[in-house]
Length: 146
Image (cartoon, rainbow, N blue to C red; front, side):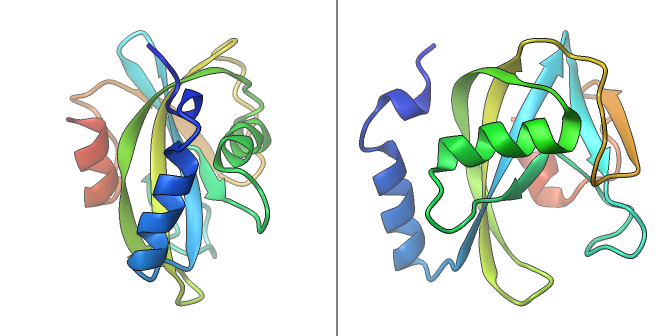
């Protein structure tokens, strides 16, 4: 499979569509698998959407390329390193805690190793099969069960 980033127009197309839709911020997310299980992280108490499970994800910083943000965020949040970005799974929009219209771009990735998972921003992690996905948002559930 070819990485979506192998297409030199991929990021420009994503950014142009988001601008047309009034998106103010991007978040990147990674579907990381170990066999038939996916990695989910739980948002800690006191945070926006506390207690909700999510994919490893985070903001694309101003001036940062989408692929760079994906590599950085997975490393920062889990201690895992992406070996390859396999596929673009799609996006959904939501309003962030600060009120910004945010678009989450989700990618299927492979990592060099699946453990240990080292958490820096979440209070728990779980590897879950398709029939045991924890309490994620409806949008995340739809993306990972396609």
